[in-house]
Length: 116
Length: 113
Image (cartoon, rainbow over all chains, first blue to last red; front, side):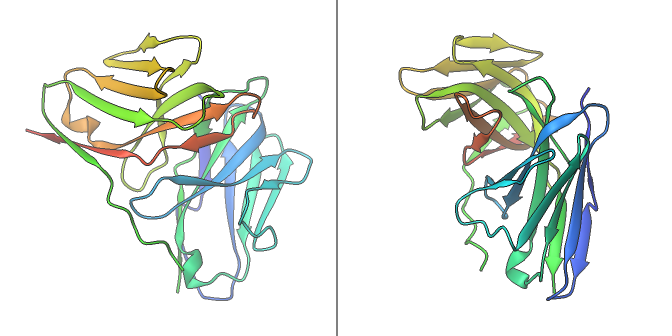
Protein backbone atom coordinates (compact mmCIF):
# COMPACT_ATOMS: atom_id res chain seq x y z
CA UNK A 1 0.00 0.00 0.00
CA UNK A 2 0.90 3.65 -0.17
CA UNK A 3 1.56 5.28 3.17
CA UNK A 4 1.70 8.99 3.83
CA UNK A 5 2.86 10.13 7.23
CA UNK A 6 2.29 13.53 8.79
CA UNK A 7 4.15 14.90 11.77
CA UNK A 8 3.22 16.09 14.29
CA UNK A 9 -0.31 14.75 14.68
CA UNK A 10 -1.10 17.44 17.24
CA UNK A 11 0.59 20.71 18.08
CA UNK A 12 -0.22 23.58 20.39
CA UNK A 13 1.70 26.80 19.89
CA UNK A 14 1.64 30.33 21.17
CA UNK A 15 0.28 33.13 19.08
CA UNK A 16 3.01 34.74 17.00
CA UNK A 17 5.20 31.67 16.71
CA UNK A 18 5.70 29.52 13.62
CA UNK A 19 4.87 25.85 13.25
CA UNK A 20 6.23 23.38 10.73
CA UNK A 21 4.24 20.34 9.61
CA UNK A 22 5.91 17.53 7.70
CA UNK A 23 4.34 15.26 5.10
CA UNK A 24 6.27 12.18 4.02
CA UNK A 25 5.51 9.48 1.51
CA UNK A 26 7.00 6.41 3.16
CA UNK A 27 6.97 3.74 0.47
CA UNK A 28 6.68 5.67 -2.77
CA UNK A 29 7.96 8.77 -4.49
CA UNK A 30 5.66 11.73 -4.95
CA UNK A 31 6.34 14.57 -7.35
CA UNK A 32 3.16 16.27 -6.22
CA UNK A 33 1.76 16.75 -2.75
CA UNK A 34 -1.31 18.67 -1.72
CA UNK A 35 -2.09 20.60 1.45
CA UNK A 36 -5.65 20.89 2.74
CA UNK A 37 -7.29 22.63 5.63
CA UNK A 38 -10.40 21.36 7.32
CA UNK A 39 -12.61 23.17 9.83
CA UNK A 40 -14.91 21.20 12.15
CA UNK A 41 -17.83 19.57 10.38
CA UNK A 42 -16.68 20.91 7.06
CA UNK A 43 -15.08 19.49 3.97
CA UNK A 44 -11.45 19.63 2.94
CA UNK A 45 -10.36 22.84 1.30
CA UNK A 46 -7.30 22.73 -0.92
CA UNK A 47 -4.72 25.29 0.13
CA UNK A 48 -1.87 24.60 -2.25
CA UNK A 49 -0.25 22.14 -4.60
CA UNK A 50 3.37 21.38 -3.85
CA UNK A 51 5.67 20.24 -6.65
CA UNK A 52 9.11 18.82 -6.00
CA UNK A 53 11.82 21.26 -6.95
CA UNK A 54 9.54 24.16 -7.82
CA UNK A 55 7.35 26.75 -6.16
CA UNK A 56 4.03 25.74 -4.76
CA UNK A 57 0.80 26.77 -6.43
CA UNK A 58 -1.59 28.40 -3.97
CA UNK A 59 -5.36 28.46 -4.22
CA UNK A 60 -7.16 31.76 -4.36
CA UNK A 61 -7.37 33.41 -0.97
CA UNK A 62 -4.49 31.48 0.60
CA UNK A 63 -1.61 33.69 1.69
CA UNK A 64 1.65 32.25 0.40
CA UNK A 65 3.72 34.25 2.88
CA UNK A 66 1.60 32.95 5.72
CA UNK A 67 1.67 29.30 4.68
CA UNK A 68 5.15 28.49 3.45
CA UNK A 69 5.51 25.28 1.50
CA UNK A 70 8.74 23.51 0.70
CA UNK A 71 8.99 20.32 -1.34
CA UNK A 72 12.69 19.56 -1.29
CA UNK A 73 12.61 15.88 -2.15
CA UNK A 74 10.37 13.28 -3.75
CA UNK A 75 9.25 12.05 -0.34
CA UNK A 76 8.93 15.18 1.79
CA UNK A 77 6.89 18.35 1.74
CA UNK A 78 6.62 20.79 4.63
CA UNK A 79 4.03 23.40 5.51
CA UNK A 80 5.09 26.19 7.84
CA UNK A 81 2.40 28.34 9.39
CA UNK A 82 4.19 31.59 10.10
CA UNK A 83 3.26 33.99 12.88
CA UNK A 84 0.36 31.79 13.84
CA UNK A 85 -2.82 33.28 15.28
CA UNK A 86 -5.84 31.62 16.89
CA UNK A 87 -7.77 31.81 13.61
CA UNK A 88 -5.14 29.52 12.07
CA UNK A 89 -6.22 26.75 14.42
CA UNK A 90 -7.48 23.96 12.22
CA UNK A 91 -6.91 20.43 10.98
CA UNK A 92 -4.25 20.38 8.26
CA UNK A 93 -4.02 17.37 5.96
CA UNK A 94 -1.58 16.50 3.21
CA UNK A 95 -1.91 14.08 0.36
CA UNK A 96 0.62 12.71 -2.09
CA UNK A 97 0.34 11.50 -5.65
CA UNK A 98 2.53 8.58 -6.65
CA UNK A 99 5.07 9.45 -9.33
CA UNK A 100 3.95 8.34 -12.79
CA UNK A 101 0.24 8.53 -11.98
CA UNK A 102 -2.26 11.34 -12.21
CA UNK A 103 -5.17 10.03 -10.24
CA UNK A 104 -5.50 8.63 -6.75
CA UNK A 105 -3.89 10.61 -3.97
CA UNK A 106 -3.04 9.12 -0.60
CA UNK A 107 -3.68 11.12 2.55
CA UNK A 108 -1.75 11.61 5.73
CA UNK A 109 -3.42 11.29 9.11
CA UNK A 110 -3.68 15.04 9.59
CA UNK A 111 -2.26 17.57 12.05
CA UNK A 112 -4.43 19.30 14.61
CA UNK A 113 -3.03 22.79 15.14
CA UNK A 114 -4.19 24.83 18.13
CA UNK A 115 -2.88 28.35 18.51
CA UNK A 116 -3.31 29.85 21.98
CA UNK B 1 -11.79 34.02 11.92
CA UNK B 2 -12.84 30.41 11.70
CA UNK B 3 -15.88 29.75 9.56
CA UNK B 4 -19.08 28.77 11.25
CA UNK B 5 -19.37 25.01 11.16
CA UNK B 6 -21.99 23.58 8.88
CA UNK B 7 -24.27 20.79 9.95
CA UNK B 8 -23.25 17.70 8.01
CA UNK B 9 -26.15 15.70 6.56
CA UNK B 10 -26.48 12.48 8.50
CA UNK B 11 -27.60 9.07 7.36
CA UNK B 12 -28.63 6.62 10.07
CA UNK B 13 -28.63 2.97 9.11
CA UNK B 14 -29.25 -0.14 11.11
CA UNK B 15 -26.43 -2.64 11.32
CA UNK B 16 -26.74 -5.18 8.54
CA UNK B 17 -28.75 -2.94 6.24
CA UNK B 18 -27.41 -1.44 3.05
CA UNK B 19 -26.34 2.21 2.98
CA UNK B 20 -26.57 4.58 0.04
CA UNK B 21 -24.67 7.85 0.22
CA UNK B 22 -25.26 10.37 -2.51
CA UNK B 23 -23.15 13.14 -3.97
CA UNK B 24 -23.87 15.76 -6.60
CA UNK B 25 -20.75 16.96 -8.32
CA UNK B 26 -20.34 20.28 -9.97
CA UNK B 27 -18.24 20.04 -13.09
CA UNK B 28 -19.13 18.10 -16.22
CA UNK B 29 -15.44 18.22 -17.16
CA UNK B 30 -14.47 16.00 -14.21
CA UNK B 31 -13.04 12.69 -15.36
CA UNK B 32 -12.25 10.88 -12.15
CA UNK B 33 -14.11 10.45 -8.88
CA UNK B 34 -13.16 9.04 -5.52
CA UNK B 35 -15.03 8.19 -2.36
CA UNK B 36 -13.19 8.72 0.90
CA UNK B 37 -14.02 7.72 4.45
CA UNK B 38 -12.90 9.96 7.28
CA UNK B 39 -13.02 8.94 10.91
CA UNK B 40 -12.86 11.54 13.63
CA UNK B 41 -9.42 13.12 13.95
CA UNK B 42 -7.96 11.21 11.03
CA UNK B 43 -7.15 11.83 7.40
CA UNK B 44 -9.38 10.61 4.58
CA UNK B 45 -9.09 6.96 3.66
CA UNK B 46 -9.53 5.85 0.06
CA UNK B 47 -12.55 3.59 -0.47
CA UNK B 48 -13.18 3.28 -4.18
CA UNK B 49 -12.73 5.27 -7.37
CA UNK B 50 -14.34 5.43 -10.79
CA UNK B 51 -13.42 7.01 -14.08
CA UNK B 52 -15.90 8.96 -16.16
CA UNK B 53 -15.96 6.31 -18.89
CA UNK B 54 -17.62 3.91 -16.46
CA UNK B 55 -20.99 4.00 -14.74
CA UNK B 56 -20.45 1.35 -12.09
CA UNK B 57 -17.60 -0.14 -10.16
CA UNK B 58 -17.62 -2.67 -7.37
CA UNK B 59 -15.27 -3.35 -4.55
CA UNK B 60 -15.47 -5.35 -1.38
CA UNK B 61 -18.91 -4.53 0.10
CA UNK B 62 -18.93 -1.21 -1.77
CA UNK B 63 -20.29 -0.12 -5.13
CA UNK B 64 -19.95 3.27 -6.77
CA UNK B 65 -22.47 4.41 -9.36
CA UNK B 66 -21.87 7.34 -11.67
CA UNK B 67 -24.61 9.15 -13.59
CA UNK B 68 -22.95 11.73 -15.77
CA UNK B 69 -26.24 12.94 -17.21
CA UNK B 70 -27.31 14.41 -13.89
CA UNK B 71 -23.81 14.70 -12.41
CA UNK B 72 -24.57 12.33 -9.59
CA UNK B 73 -22.39 9.86 -7.74
CA UNK B 74 -23.45 7.34 -5.14
CA UNK B 75 -21.72 4.99 -2.77
CA UNK B 76 -23.48 1.83 -1.75
CA UNK B 77 -22.25 -0.09 1.28
CA UNK B 78 -23.62 -3.59 1.69
CA UNK B 79 -24.32 -5.09 5.10
CA UNK B 80 -23.31 -1.95 6.97
CA UNK B 81 -21.21 -2.52 10.08
CA UNK B 82 -20.53 -0.32 13.12
CA UNK B 83 -17.00 0.22 11.81
CA UNK B 84 -18.47 1.93 8.79
CA UNK B 85 -19.58 4.86 10.94
CA UNK B 86 -17.67 7.88 9.68
CA UNK B 87 -17.98 10.90 7.41
CA UNK B 88 -17.92 10.07 3.72
CA UNK B 89 -16.72 12.49 1.08
CA UNK B 90 -16.89 12.31 -2.66
CA UNK B 91 -14.13 14.03 -4.59
CA UNK B 92 -13.86 14.94 -8.25
CA UNK B 93 -10.87 15.62 -10.43
CA UNK B 94 -11.06 17.91 -13.41
CA UNK B 95 -9.61 16.65 -16.66
CA UNK B 96 -5.98 17.64 -16.96
CA UNK B 97 -5.52 18.92 -13.41
CA UNK B 98 -3.19 16.16 -12.28
CA UNK B 99 -4.89 14.91 -9.13
CA UNK B 100 -6.18 18.25 -7.89
CA UNK B 101 -9.31 17.10 -6.10
CA UNK B 102 -12.42 19.05 -5.18
CA UNK B 103 -14.27 17.60 -2.21
CA UNK B 104 -18.00 17.49 -1.63
CA UNK B 105 -19.57 18.59 1.63
CA UNK B 106 -19.62 15.14 3.21
CA UNK B 107 -22.23 12.86 4.76
CA UNK B 108 -22.05 11.40 8.23
CA UNK B 109 -23.02 7.74 8.38
CA UNK B 110 -24.27 6.52 11.75
CA UNK B 111 -24.71 2.82 12.15
CA UNK B 112 -27.15 1.83 14.86
CA UNK B 113 -27.18 -1.54 16.53
